[in-house]
Image (cartoon, rainbow, N blue to C red; front, side, top):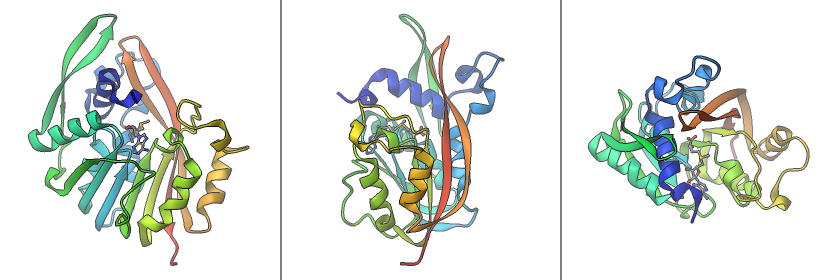
Length: 241
Ligand SMILES: C[S@@+](CC[C@H](N)C(=O)[O-])C[C@H]1O[C@@H](n2cnc3c(N)ncnc32)[C@H](O)[C@@H]1O
């Protein structure tokens, strides 16, 4: 079973995407600046309005919903059926009840709610594999892939598929903490040397780098354990082919 099918990770990601600040980080020391990573990556896109956006590895959907603010239509794809089911419940009902892990056997009732000013009608969520998308997945104005790359079995093959998905002039936001783990990516598929240099080398033939920065993110595991990471987030514009 994929980790992302587990009830525990569903809870962690619902909390990360929709939880209250004090639930996600109850300690005043450290970490507050790491909240809202899932909103910050979407803000890398230019403010202009576009037609069609694709959110790969959308998890429980917050970024897909946020993309509706500037997109006519958004498709959110994730490998995990339970994440997609939760995103669809949020789309249909505007909220979803879940349990937040406090400690040991103690779980606390929580409710995730849609962020304001989004249009759930514009989003379609589907379970799918970012490495094996339908042939018709091309001509997108925007592709968002946040913290997905180092969860894939063949990151280079995924990067190679991106130019085919985007329209000329289309925007790509890629976020990754370069957390290479054999559990997801066989070692022979890990980049050699500096991962950020490798990523730029792979994308530059087809994309122009617009901006990049380091963005912290935090995932609450239980009331006294937090996973803090720092993603390299980059905005790219597809060159004319
Ligand atoms: C580290 S999480 C990041 C989720 C979300 N983008 C965020 O920033 O909160 C990785 C996500 O990618 C999904 N995923 C892993 N492999 C995938 C694949 N081959 N195709 C689509 N989604 C995948 C997982 O189910 C999970 O939701």
